[in-house]
Image (cartoon, rainbow, N blue to C red; front, side, top):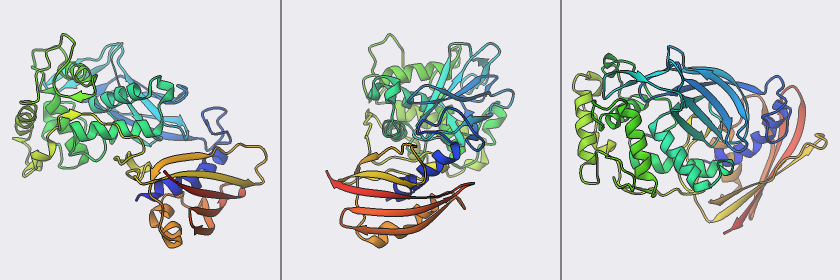
Length: 387
């Protein structure tokens, strides 16, 4: 059930607030302990000398920034937040990316960008064609970008994963970077390698006579998905290069070509790489792939709404928001509620001690001692309401 996301998340909320020394939007007035190191790995192939900005998805406030330099990876210090986040990778003068279709570096000019949205801040983030179209899908679902929520972002990322990269567990994981033709032969049969293979196979759908095939495919794919369907149909004057009858065969042919000289990929099951045509269904509060080490996996589905209320002893007037999560299952017993290993595994090591736990009917309570430069007691109440 992945209760570590839900129950453990409630327990760590206050710890995050206290350690950052701010209110729920902990993007302001940073104090020691309120920052973290973030590593962003963007790929169209490898992108050099691009600007990378991390933002709060709700407020738009910049949390940190860096550049990909000559490594293709941006590592920088960012302000922590409990809100969802957006990463923007922006072209500028001197920026280039390695295009797998052309087999050479091409310009990544000012005005060009790829983005990724995540339901919560992660220390390692991948950004790609897939995350860009997922961001656009989430933005369309939410309306104004300030309305982006963790649930909408998770739903959009999962919908795009299912449609375009069912072989992956998560589209915001960092891909293996390809900065040369030789790099294609070093791809391993792992999550990062499979991600790189899919991105290369997608880029190669556009002929290498195009100036920027990977970016062209991204724009064409975004146009295809504007109507909420992956079907190779668009009202725009764009030659997509694929349709519902040949997309799978094009992907397969490109993958076979890519792995011909790569002994690491012998026996790879290419049927798992097949895109799935049809509606892009963004499920809010439903099942979905997690995003890296911080998410813990999928958000469960069920017939209850969960309200999480936090009561603190000795914290003065610091407001602790009530959180509601929709459509989840209710634990059957106190043992299930209190002793699930995924809950305990979600807690920061040494920072939080559970001092008491009970569950009866539709209400569970967990008492906690926070030990992080300050000793503080608080109680988190979980109330399950039938839908």
